[in-house]
Length: 429
Image: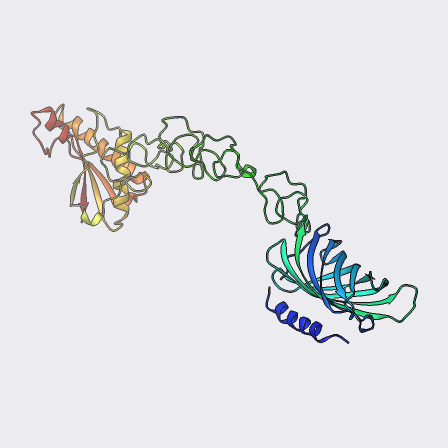
């Protein structure tokens, strides 16, 4: 039967255990030293006065939850006749440390116990011993142990039956040696979580204990992705760790499609030299490769294919002078420029299939009248033949030579005579 004082001690320990928070985890090889004071309740059969004593316990953790502990105690008490009796105690026990909250643990011990009563009694008892208590942690290494012991002992030699020896004790618990989970490479990550054991001292690691990637040149790009290690300090770089504009053309590498442009070269938005314009021989704005009407006269309206934009027949006057058609003196041959202009004229005529025209040829007054009439007719027929070859139906065109009969300018000047050497389209109603 537990004595009232011992029961009161245990009753006070339970609320204390529930008011603290999870214990700091020791590990194997941690040493615990506990100087303590104890109050012993001796068996009634020994007639000894209960009283205080001192002691010390020392233990070593074999695992995070189990330690092997040895305890020595000493007390001086008296018999009823005031005879002084010394009591020395030795105990060896296995102690289980169960975490509660913060740095506090519940203690349960079981093992061997021995008591020696000197002087007036000269008795030695030994047997089984047990321990129940709490360790309240103040820091990683310092705590307070509150516990009760109960030893079931018998005198050596078996002269009498076994007796209970009960005590309450309090001690200062000091942890020495390594604490917490083992960290062999001292990188701050316990071995149980360390995927990269053996990390070099001082190396920064991630939560798994593996070394973090380095940035040797300090450009903000880790070595594993840095294509240009050794970048100068302060140099702006792109995501590959290289200069942000390697060829210095003003276009960032990420957008530069021509990353090796020669210095001072004019480039477009993609860092490439602008494309050379396609050749346009006649200067009409349509590249030669798409120009179906090369040689178009300057300033003449053209379509997307480089051909003269046809004039709507409905806007043609009854009499249209083909001023772009010029002939050399005494000649009825068309030049390439004449043919280009006549293609546009043919397109205009084809747009109005109901209209019929006379191709009228004219000359200046140089030479005989008969020769000029023949020459003007030849020129009219030359123009008509080209228009027919360009698709205008032959029955919509007639030709006639008027010679010098109908001048539109003075034949007294060379400019006037040039204007009179002409071809006209006259609408036939």
